[in-house]
Length: 188
Image (cartoon, rainbow, N blue to C red; front, side, top):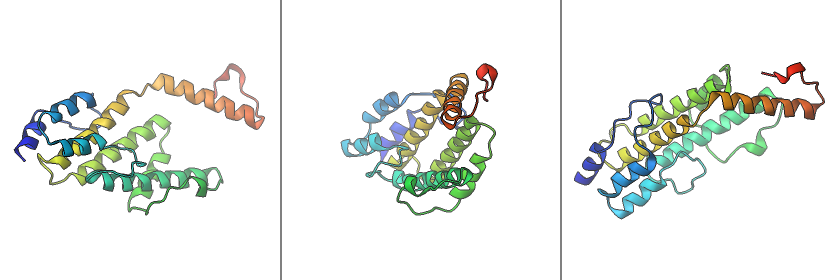
């Protein structure tokens, strides 16, 4: 237990999903490697935001189930908006309370970037909820790693590049549907 205290105390504080990345995942894992047992370290490395990970350790399993439910709700709502069937894209998962409301709120955002920022904030809060009561233990470190992955992902967002990709995709959809693209190609 003392080793977890030293590892946890050696890491910069994470205060929220809007902060800059204080330390990258590789550096975080390097710090932890020095203080925790091999088996726990392997589980820490496996700690991930990816809902497709079958062997999610500790709180990551609960997070995985929540994320799958959220993604399924997003699929259902996006498909309904387009009058399409969502069945093909739904992943095996139980519906978890609250994910439908989060998906609805994300769908109401005015841009894909705003929706992603909102979803990341909800993800952060879920990790906080799952790690409540875990101080200086492996679950604290797993939660830290997952939050760090959110920060690293957000650091890669580039609004201009994202909008350009959105315009290109929109133009391809219009072309495929036989719709004329407005002059100047400004579809957004």
